[in-house]
Length: 119
Length: 111
Image 1 (cartoon, rainbow over the protein chains, first blue to last red):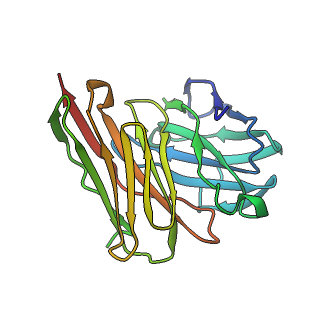
Image 2: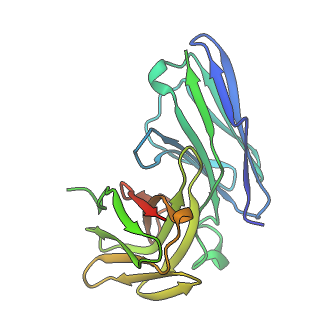
């Protein structure tokens, strides 16, 4: 099973709302990622968690707050977003570089994304 | 210069054609290479994964990596209208968790 599940599939929120995106995987991967993708552009990395610790933050504004409560779950908390934050938000998972046996098997699997519209 | 260059297309071919998609890169530290297929408004789907140089085949898909030329390719044989999508190359350097993506090539296969 190479499935990464994201909920919700669609989300419309106002600029004063607080909402959360959720991601789940059961592949035993210890690295999980959030990406943002605008139309006709490649995914842009936002955050990486490795063994439930934040290892990369690509200078993302604080209105985006990631959380990794356990090895299977990844959340992205949203607050006071702007209309330009409207995009497809993708979660991905892979083996962590800290996992010795994963030396060769580090391909990343993506979820279907949450299409976020900020109004 | 971008780290990974990919022609955005669109690339239009008739059904049954052999399709060649390519990426070039500048970072010689890249060792892990991936090809993803992405349908409109969906997440990227992993098609092929290759470590270092060489060829890899899976059904109608063949991935090639030429590290000496810093050039990777994805070949699709007997292309089908259902192959119409955007194809993204992605790569990673040893010791780095971050994937670097090409811009994606839009492929259109007409019946």
